[in-house]
Amino acid sequence: MHQETELILSVAGFPPYSGRSCLQQLMPAAPRVFQRTVNGVLSCVSLETAPKYRSVIRGRDISSPAFDLFWTGTQMSVGCIHRLWQRLKEGENRLTLTRPPVEHSVCVVDRAGQPVAFTREGQDVTLKTPPSADAFIGFCPWLTMSVLNFCFETDEWGTASAWQLVLEEV
Image (cartoon, rainbow, N blue to C red; front, side):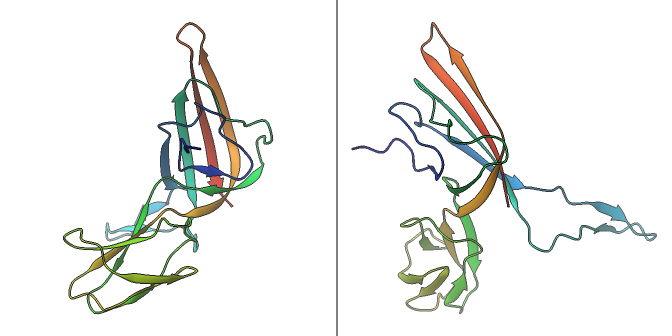
């Protein structure tokens, strides 16, 4: 069976024609707080040590996803469709990803966009040979998130359904 979306929601499902062309935004969950010092230098005064993500996921299709098993506050695992990138500096050949990756989503490319050979064990990625220039490791993260809000919209005569899901990493 053909999969309509790469998005994975552990507590929901995608009936046929409900998940094509999903859009996902990832943004900081809590805005940073900035203040100026007496010398006029802008400084971040947030105490956050482990940054978290907020995500807004939207879809528009013929039908809507099966969101009946969750409500505001429900926790779920989200296999994101948005790819995060981390830089591996010249000469380094090992990096630990900031979040667990969705299976088969990890890729490594050089500055020219050419694939680089690697192995992965959990969140650790090791290049077969250290790069002669910076390399970039991309992956779709698994995030444990709570539902903040969701909504549906139906165009009866246009036989279209739109939906939005707002989540925040726990």
